[in-house]
Image 1 (cartoon, rainbow, N blue to C red):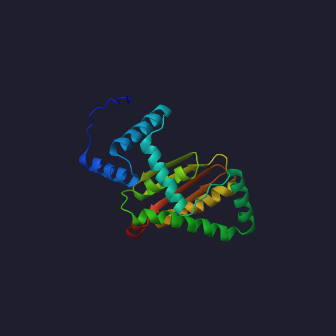
Image 2 (cartoon, rainbow, N blue to C red):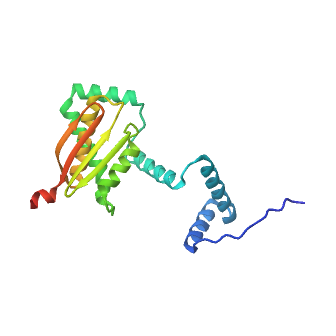
Image 3 (cartoon, rainbow, N blue to C red):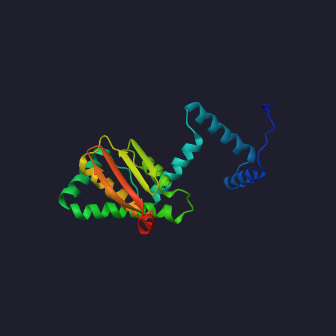
Length: 198
């Protein structure tokens, strides 16, 4: 005699059920098994204090980062290698970091993102694990950005400021003020169209 499984009715949106049915078909399992697997994952995540929506957004961000060429590097090694490059070929390295900012921001200009700069900075903080805080304050056509990188050496702040300047340029801003200390980068930028009309 088999073990009887108690079942309970559950209601969901039709479009979601159809999509899940398609996923189950592709995976070669029943909708029942797939739904139970998803419930188990959701319960485990909840028990662990993991927000599934945050988790899936971060995973998608990491997948995008991998696709566009990001790699994980030990922080100390990264600082040491960037310092060696900065000291031996300052202008070339600054140009490379500016261009990296341009490339990183292009995705946000090509997408239908409502506030591309804000989304860029949110994702930037999630990708750059050595950044402890990013504050963005808008003031009319100007934007003030402050980034805290507490463990970073000063040269790294200079490189980071250049990367952000490249991103801001791509997102339609021009940097007017730049301040870099050992652990903080501050930028003030103005929208280019505001400069042209003012």
